[in-house]
Image 1 (spheres, rainbow, N blue to C red):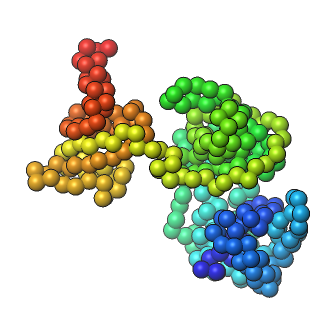
Image 2: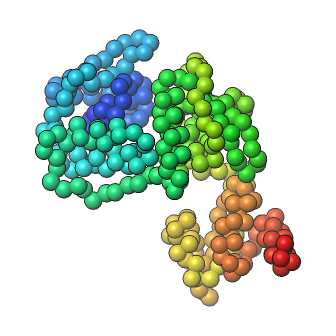
Image 3: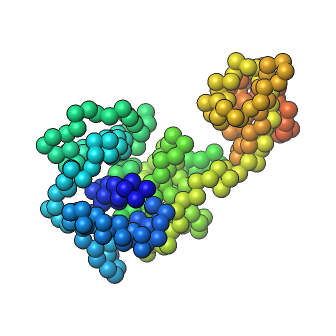
Length: 297
């Protein structure tokens, strides 16, 4: 809906100094012409928006301007506040709280709203520091370097950062990896020693493709039978349609995993009660773990 898009554009402009037309068009999946009409609508509604052309240009709210709360309904303010609070949960600064105060004005909504979102991890301190550094490096067009710990081993990476992504219950960096010469997704929890580096010439970076098939190709299609008491685990991890129930009550599932360790780790959660039908590599890995446990090694 147009109103939802206008609220979204206004929210973005409240959170950053400037946004480009291509960025807004891509974010809301509409044409640049549509974004231009939306900007005109916001101007007619009394929002003092300034646009500039050329390199370094974009759309911004004029400095010193105040936003009239009457333009937003209570429910819309609650939705924006929930989003700002969620970002504030992983920020070391108070800028999101300050934004909420600007939106609320002298007469905040009578009720808080019913949505509470905490995006922080257990180790919030280090996560907030990484996010704040990336929020500094991305607009400035500066590289970042860090030591990365992955299942395949440790490595030092130099990356041109473009997006901070929250997906699958964790935070990631999407950027151009100079070592791999391709776009990569890096989990912030696996980074150590994150540092801001030198300026780089920005590429026409694609929006992150976060589809499972792109990032986690199913190299191991695991088929197994588990007792019905593990329904909760299947529903929690893969949804209510991830399995079928056999006449004897057991649950049959076929789930793809990108790594052998991921497949084995998931099956171990069934405490030896899973009858693994395939593939053979997964069965062999489980058998090897069982033999080690039996020996007490």
